[in-house]
Length: 252
Image 1 (cartoon, helix red, strand yellow):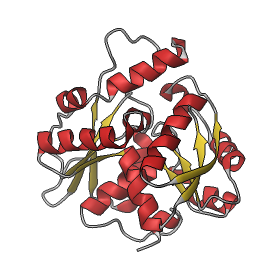
Image 2 (tube, one colour):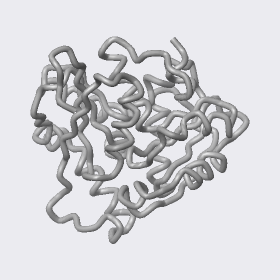
Image 3 (cartoon, helix red, strand yellow):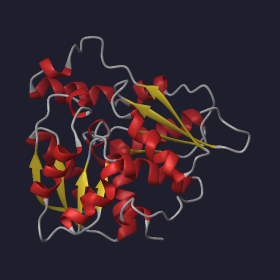
């Protein structure tokens, strides 16, 4: 979409080309047909081959390396300067801890001179907006990485009462998951003590599932794509209240 004179412009830093960008664009079109979303890609380390071929320790190191603030700053080059920017990767932000995620956002904000955040920080903002303090995690990651996300949430005062870990090989593999598989993961992760269910992965295609996921578990379901665009839209003046996108987009 070509930016118009009065368009609102969101810049997303993204880890792997041709994974979940179309899901972001689909949600943005539902929020506002004039909303422009541009992507810039953060290159993986030169010694990283296929993520699928790495063991857990190698994947963890690759993810942490990708989220180094200097690497993000160097990659934050958009054809048009956005009005707001977000590091649209969950694991590459939460594995640096809460202060590390905040540092990523500070560096991006200084680099572009606009409000900046990340998917992991957006989860925290969304949870505060919904007044949620206990969550279940439908994680696609290795159990160690899932534990890192639970630790990140705990730093912000959010308790994880239950989690499941699918241990998927890569974001590119996750981009091919269909709705049935995502829904199965969500229902397996749900817990009666959880006030909301979190699905932290921006390669998954979750926009068409938002309403059905909440119906399936009977509580708010926050997906990585949804919270990233919700928070970015909020920085631009607030997303509209819309039906069929879940509790996050329904509550003022």
